[in-house]
Image 1 (cartoon, rainbow, N blue to C red):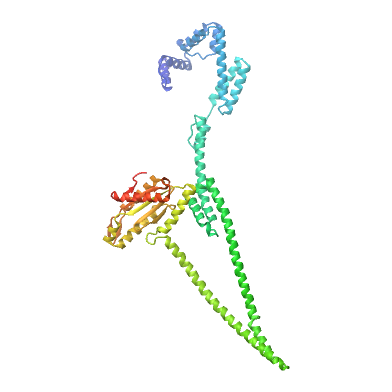
Image 2: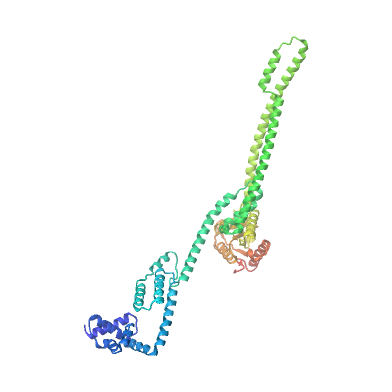
Length: 516
C-alpha cells in the first residue's frame, strides 16, 4: 500500500463519519490508517516526540489525557500553564470532585438498577479515597457500562402504545394515557353488557306504581350504559330496588288478602250448600225410601211420617234444582271467561295500534309523547342531552290535490320507511301531524342533529317516489333544537318548530339553523 492509498482511505473514513474534511480530521484518519497498515510516518509521531521532550512530571500528567493530535497537545499545555499555583489546581480538582458527586447522585435517581449500584460504588470510592488506580477502575467500569448498555427492552412497550423513550416522565404519561383509554373502552363494553341484564332484572314489576320510573331508568341504561359508573345513578337504582321491593310486598299482601277473602267466601258458600243439601242427593233418595217403607203402628206418628216425606222430597227437589243451577252458572262463567279473554286480547292489540301510526309504522303522537316524556325524565335526572328535529313535507297539499290522497299516503309511508332505515335503535321517530314528522336524537348535539336532518333531506330529495308509473318529486324541510340550550322542554320544542317555520318561509327544502 502506498501513501496515496493511505490518504485515499483516510478521506473515505472522514466522509463515512460525516465529518468535515479539515486538516485535523484528515490528520487523525491518516495516522489511524497508517498505524493500522504498519506504516511508520514521521508526522504521525510528532505528538509522542513532543511529549518525550517534557519534564517527567509533566509527562506523567499528560499520560492521564488522551492526546491524539497537536491541537490536543497544545490544549493540554495551555491548561497546565493556566494552573498557576498548586492551590488553584487543588481548588479546581475539589470543584470537579463535587461536580462528579452531584452527577453520580443524579444517576442514582434515574431508575436503572445497574447504573444506580455503580453510581453508589463510585460515590463511596470518591468520598473515602484518592487512589488514582481506584478511580481508573471506576472509570473502566463506567466505560464497560456505556459500551454494553442495551435499552432495546423498551421496544416491548410498542405493542401497547407509542411512547417517548427518551424521557422517562413522558414515557410513564404515555403509558398511563394508553391504559386509561383501554380501561375506559373495556369499562364501557362491560357496562353495555350489564345494562340489558339490569333492565331485565328490574322489569316488569308486580306493582304498577313504579312502571313509569322503571321505564325512565331503562331508557337511560339503553342510551347511556356508562351511567352505571355515576354515584347518582347507582343511588337511584338502589332506591328503586328498595321501593319496588316494598311496593311488591304490599301488592302481594293485598293480593293474598283478596285471595283469602275469596276463599272465605267460597268456604261459606260450600257450608251453605251443605246446609241446604245436608247430604248428597243419592243419600236423600235413600232416606226417602226408608221413610216410605217404615211402618208406624202408632197413628199419631202418621203425621210425622208425612212431614218427613215432605221434607225428604223438598230436599231432593232443592238439591236437584241447586245442581242444575250450578251447572247453568258454570256455563255462564265459562262463556264470560272466554269473552273476557277475547276482550283482553283486543285491548292489547288496540293499545299497540294506538301507539303506532298505521300508515307510516312510526310512533303515533300518543306513543311519541310517552317516549319523549322518558327522554325528558332522563335529561332531568342524569343530564342525558338530546336534540329535537321537526320535519314537514313541502307542498304536500298540492301533491294530494294533483295526484290524489292515495299518492299522498304512498309518500307518507315511504318517508316513514326512510326514517326507520336511517335512524338508530335508540332514536325516537313519530308522526306528529298530517305530513309532519319529529325525531328525538339522544346524546346528539345541535351540530350532529343538523347533519342528520340534512342527510334525511338529501335522501328524500333524491328518492324516486313512484305512483301509477309516474314519478313525484318530493322535498322536505326541517327545524332543529338542542334540549340543553333551553330552560324547558316546551321551549325546546317551540324553538325547533320556529326553525321549521323559518325553513319553509325561506324557500323550503332546507334545514334550519344552517349550522350548529
